[in-house]
Length: 226
Image (cartoon, rainbow, N blue to C red; front, side, top):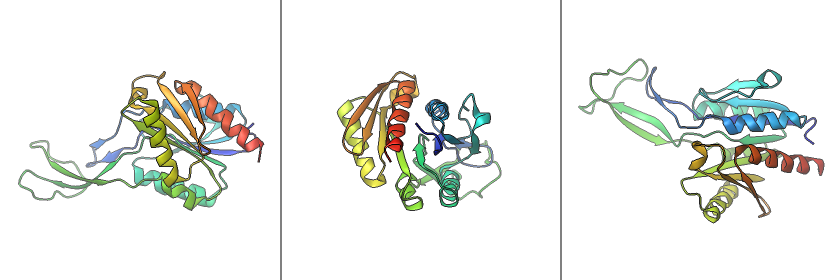
C-alpha cells in the first residue's frame, strides 16, 4: 500500500533550553510515533524517523533513517532542509512541539543573565518566554505536493470540540488529515482519537495503536488511488 513511498514521521517532545543544563519539555514519550513508524514500515514505506531527545525509538529503528532534534527551531530547520533536498511523499507531524521558547532570563534584581553556561542555583531566576514558531503551516510552502498529517491535542475529550479544532488547524496548514485527541492520551494508550479528513469525514479510533493503523490504511488507499 505504501511501497516506494518516503514518509517522514516526527515524534516525541521538543526540548527548549534555559541554560546549558536546564530546559523545559512536555509529557510526550513518542509512543504514537513508534506505532506510526512500525506500521508504515510494514506497508512497505521508507521511513525517516525524526525524534525528540527523550522520545522512544521504534523496535525496528535499524531499518529506518533516524534524525534527532532538540528544540522546535532545530526541528524546523532540519525538516525544511529535508523537504527541500529530497522528494518526500508524506509528512506526519506527531511531534509535541513547545508553545513557548525562552526569550530572556533575569536575576531577582531584574538584571539580564548571560546566555549559556549554568544559572546559579542560589536564587530562582525570572524567565521571560516568547511564542514558539508553528511548523505545520509552513510545510506546504517547503513542499507543496507533500501529503500532510497534523495532530491536535486539546484538554477536553468532547468529540465535537476536537473535530472543530482539527478543522480550524487544517485551514491554516492545508493538511490532508488531522488527528485530534485529548490530553488523556498523554497518560495512557486507549484514549479516543479522531482522524479528520480534508473532505470533512471523520474516522474514529480507540487508542494510539488503532489510530495508527487506520491512518496508515487511509494514507495507503490515497496513494493507491493516485
